Amino acid sequence: MADVAVDFRSDTLTKPSAAMRAAMAAAEVGDDVLGDDPTVIALEAEVCELLGFEAAVFVPSGTQSNLVGVMTHCARGDEYIVGQEAHTYRYEAGGAAVLGSVQPQPLDNAADGTIPLPAIEAAVKPNDSHFAKSRLLALENTIGGKVLPAGYTAAAREVADKHRLAMHLDGARLWNAAVKQGVPPRTIAKGFDSVSVCLSKGLGAPVGSVLCGGRDFISDARRWRKMLGGGMRQAGILAAACRYALANNVERLADDHDNAARLNAGLSKHADLLVAPTQTNMVFVVVPEAIARAFTAHLTADGVRPYGTTKQRWCTHLDVSRADVDAAISEGPGLRWALMGPHLTFHLAGGEGGMAHFLAQLGPPLESWWGDLGAPSLTPQVQKALTEGVAAAAGDRDVATLAATRDRFLLDLLALKKTPLTIEPQPV
Image 1 (cartoon, rainbow, N blue to C red):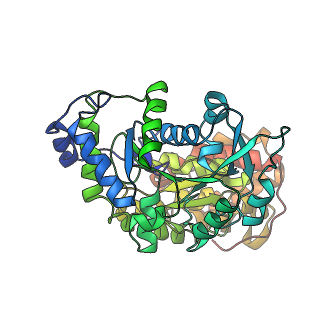
Image 2 (image 1 turned 180 degrees about the horizontal axis):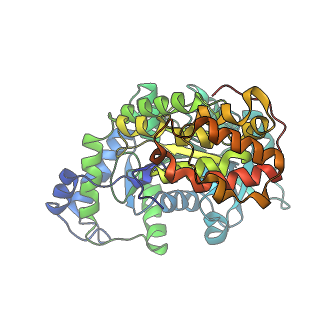
């Protein structure tokens, strides 16, 4: 496997810069469990001011921050209403149910990331001993890279108030939402009883989230943090990184959004890839199974690493530059090969000029292909097409260019031959 040159899997991959490390080294510290770490105190006050809350508590992770929030709002046997795609429900190991005995009531998210308000109202349980008590509505912004539409939170707040529900926001990427909409962070946080924000994603801190709420709420939250093992001693070293991130890395999130849009445009040029619209720093791509293995092999060989295979997430962040994006989407011969898998059987059957035309489009063939393929494993038709193709195109191009892609292409060729595809040819 090639070394990873550009890692698009997540914005959690960001590494602290030299300046951030210097701030950490110089941090004034105390014992945060005892409440006397000055850098942690300063961070909590700063986030409260940015988001418009009375109090805050510094925790190691966003998962713990959300868990503490849910457990502070809800007692055993209570229920929280949440989206099916929400991180709090889907990707946090069921912590609220396992550790808090809080029942989730998941609802389908709409295409824009919202939970439809009628569905929320219908999910609220009656005051009946047969049911869990509906206590909390949990939303996420951004969710799947999407910013909740302006006005949605206020409308959800009306529903919550009608049914006496508290509201919690998983704002792990609240900063992205604020930058995208061009509003202060407190605008995104407005209307919620508690908000969790992460500082270790696009902002680049190595560790840390902050849970905000009212004074009494945060006093209770500190007890849950302690019980869950989140109390840290000289945590000012980490808080200093978070403060540096807030001072230096929020506005530059616009660069990540621009890079994601550029990445989206580059990937969208390939007709075989289904690329969803991009709002912030995430690009979601559906790769047909027929080409997924070859496409992933090409990316791996070039040191490009998204998350997933047939359903991919490409995430831009502090450590991904515009040049990195351009390199990832550059259309070298290896990428063209990887994306042409579905059209291979069409050309092998003689369509549109046959295999000679296919090879001529893709780049330099290798004369050793014939021996690598092995005549007994191929039908006479395929043998003839390959022979004609190599004879027509060999010697005209730089053989070394595609040496790294040869073996995986041969495997894909054999796999495609065993499972013929009926798909119309596309321009390359």
